[in-house]
Length: 112
Length: 112
Image 1 (cartoon, each protein chain N blue to C red):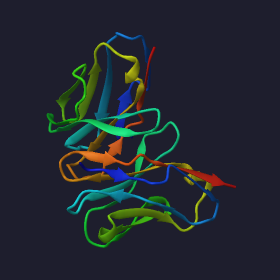
Image 2: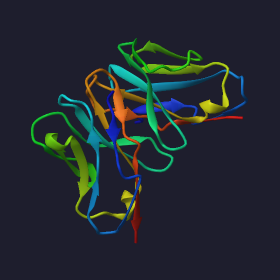
Image 3: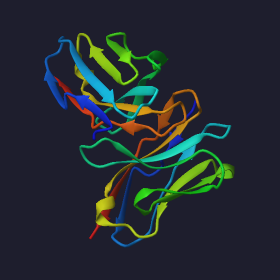
């Protein structure tokens, strides 16, 4: 069965530090991959997506992610974290069947 | 302009009651979804609809009945509410099976 793994439940970084959130997917063929962010009490907002082509994708709010087929990974990065980035981050994949699988999320805490 | 809206935002009810949640999207998308997010933030797809047709039903109890009167609306009716139904329910839409999903703000359901 398809699955998306986010190994880190919580991550704490200092403001201004770099960030990497890990995501591994299981779908064998090329999946459609997404990163979403959820602020407290809010819905999910799309940060970026990968369908095909360039394996490094740029998103909103200064985020980027790199698709690595050999590692089945789609890690999210940001060079310098801002206090407003504190939120829950979800990685998701779609195999093209109207079914999206979400990871369990990573809660990001930013220290001033 | 709200892209995906849900009503109500909060719902507190007694066990055994029947309740409905409404969802509307003004993005012109063909596909709509219902998700359940539990207290641990785990997000699980419940239903997918494409052009008013049910595509995905993820082993949801038949107490949950979605209805799509048109492509812009997807409502969720829940019969005989149970304590375990307490969660946040998100509606989402996308252009097609691989498109980026746009989420509503969520409906926080508490069953007492």
